[in-house]
Image (cartoon, rainbow, N blue to C red; front, side):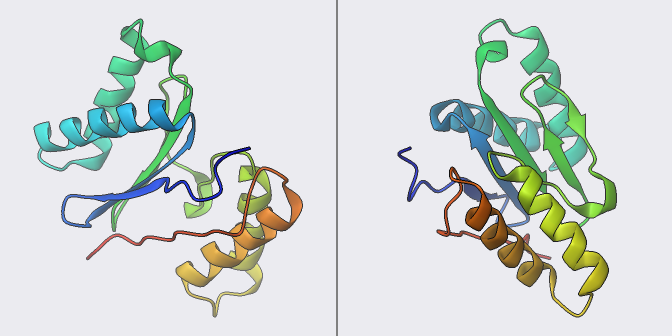
Length: 149
């Protein structure tokens, strides 16, 4: 495993949009570039850009071979763009992708329910640390980004 310090979080549109990705880093960067193009083409409409990216992902023979997933969010929306070209709106405003996703998501949902005094950032950080304690493919080198208002 050679991803100890890979930065898989990016901010777009002057920090108003945050993207995170899992899977092949080269594939994810290609998708990130395509998503950024769609975001610009559709007036920074997050959902529309994600849907148009997913359409391309399903149609394009080359894109279908990419092995990556993305989470995209702004201050109003949270979406997962899956490796099969689906756009998902997660339940309960919690999204997780990657090797430790189920551990992080479970921890985040528990914290959201039982520790409402924590900020969203604190919940994210603690959830990722819990996932890293459990999953051998997840580490404690965290990069947490929040969309600008």
